[in-house]
Image (cartoon, rainbow, N blue to C red):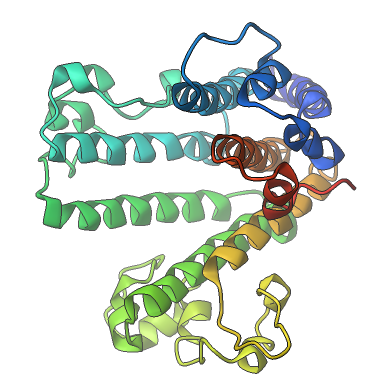
Length: 344
């Protein structure tokens, strides 16, 4: 079908999928179950596999992820030439798969021990049939530099390079969107990337005691930066750089931050310290609500699938939170509050 017909069909189909999804006010239903078996039936409307609870929890999370990916692919296939950024979003799973492959190979696993990999069908850049040969898996792809199994000491460096390459690819794709989307969906994705970079920097300072000078080279940047001036001007790292001198124990200092509403609250007679886990979860809820509001605002544009992807990622995150809560016997109300899946 032509692009205008595809746009109309995808918008209608994506809307129907969201109406049946556990998003918005329906997200709370995920946390109303009392067992992993009950959650399985709620999500998939099919017989529960006869597996031990730990294995069933893992199988449920994998199936939920696979369902999300398959639904997105079904929507994407309606375009003979989908917007590059829509394909790049899906290729996030190529990067994550490759990190899992590297981790498995670093442990010396052989061909019978291939890790679970997300299947993105014809949109993948990688040749997974080449397992366990890393060179064959990445050959001819933008990730062909990753062709030798690193040592354990190098594995973190490889993960960082993969994350950086994906972020830069995503940022470039977002910048190529039509100007009509610049102040809506483009900003949604860019602000989330900047905030994730901020959380990364806070973790390095808080958990590893790194100084400003140690953190700077580990920031994610859009371009290779050779000086502090370059870092300050970088659209991804610049906003983070300006906070590297801020006291992690001073709420008053962080209260002037653009995203201060995402901070963990202060408690009377208790010393406050910034909590990156709290910020990360608050951010997921915040950007999900933004995406829900934007979904219908620009129909028949790439904004439909860009926001749909973000909304469904949050649904998947809620499913994982509920599954882990059930497996660890955490009260579902507590798990629901952590996920931010309150009834609206």
